[in-house]
Length: 404
Image (cartoon, rainbow, N blue to C red; front, side):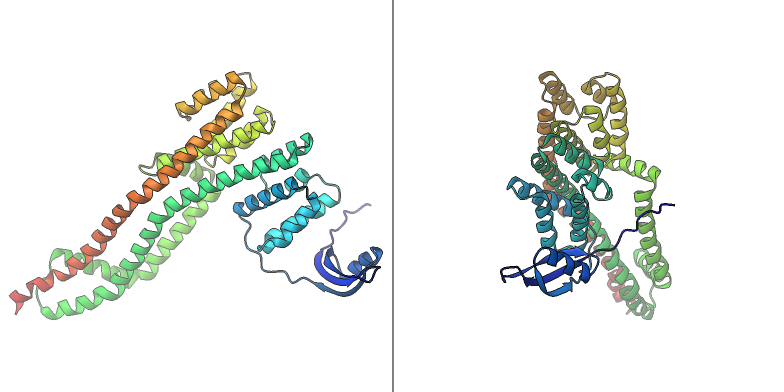
């Protein structure tokens, strides 16, 4: 009975030696062991003098930004005429993240054994989604891989830029709330009890605000472990549910679009990603129905993912893209008009790209505006919170004259 071949673990070996002319040479080789490296070098006419296994650095998590940087580097080198395998070698050796270097070495090994580049990427769906693989496959089929990689790099850079701006806009108020919670907790646990002892010695009736703050302080002192555990655990389980539970994802995606200040920002960023993705896929020559497979997921919002699925079903039955998008009732009038003009002129990719440019600029302006708007709001919030505690604790001191 035939058994499946076991994949042998390979390592990176650094070697030094002399070639047939006695010239000193050095390099790197992937192999299962030193003996294999030595045999390979001798077949090449190299007499090895030193072989050592490279010590792997602890790898960090591979982020979408890492993939975007790799795509840009690969596109640049291929445009410069560097062979594909050599380009992978250069990018892998120059990457500071050992996890990325290992991923690129594994992909290079697959390509070296005859696998297509898109096929090698498809083995790692966690890092290369269907959109990425489809574009690379289209580039290989049309013989314009370097051009498609360049287009893909531009797309990923713009997408990551939007994500970064959204995160920076949201992180500012979140970080302030966290700092405020920590400061209030320290005041409640360590500062207020000291005031309480002083007030007890006065023997006077305390004002209602002071009694309220002291009561909160007693709760914090007695149940601090439960408060911190509940807050931390609640946030953790909520984020896990948001990430893994489909119903929670749909609810939060709808809520994010309806938020009073940030909802418009999220809405415009989703529109920018949706139009940018479809424009990139269409420009690469991917058929519209097939392109819509990747567009919904790339939007980053389940509302638009469901809408894209409906659009795909209508387009596959002969409905125009503009009509299908209008029926979805989630796109702004400007995008619908740009799409209609693109269909009439045969330049959908160009018109959707223009729409993406517009909404990306809108996101930039909104992030700048929100940063200016949030500063006074946060100052008022922190001032009111901390000031209220301070005033409530100093109210009894104003009554000292009646006690003495």
